[in-house]
Image (cartoon, rainbow over all chains, first blue to last red; front, top):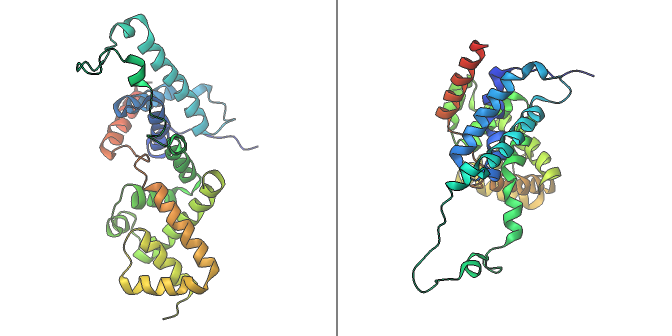
Length: 184
Length: 79
């Protein structure tokens, strides 16, 4: 069995988006999510020698990230954190006193199913991108998610536009196949 | 008027980024009418576009990524 190697220099490029999408559905705050991802990289760096190569780098980082997210919730739930909680009760006279009733979601207002379906979409997509060869993945990300135009990408990688479209085509085929298994 | 599957796929890919011209789109539509494989590819491709364009799919800004990289490098040299 080939063991997985570890290289912190590539972490940000390869995993930050994946980890970020994983975090954001769990903490629901962009800044905090970014901090957690950063902390995960630091923690990973610190315990690099414990990495046995049994799991892939990504799985390993995710397991650190999970701990970080739990820690984050512990922290805001500690006594100190609790003291900082502000209650935002809308007090506009008319609706006074209707704590629970107001907070209960309207069952017909939103389609819960579609909501659940969407929460992990980001993670699923970046998981599939991760399976692509590195160059394909980078170009696909630039073109599709970050929305660079063809010319910029061609210049950066020194390829012709027909070259780019071939890469995009391969990436899209692979992505569709991967997402078909996990998503559609 | 009739195009090869390769070209059809290429137009279809371009169309996902709104870069296909009107003539190309018409050619693609005609091709899809009779080509089952390309019809399937087209549907899947459209689905993929819809998924990645979902506002919930986000990536970190490049500037923040760069700072992350620098911080990480700093930590690495400390060790």
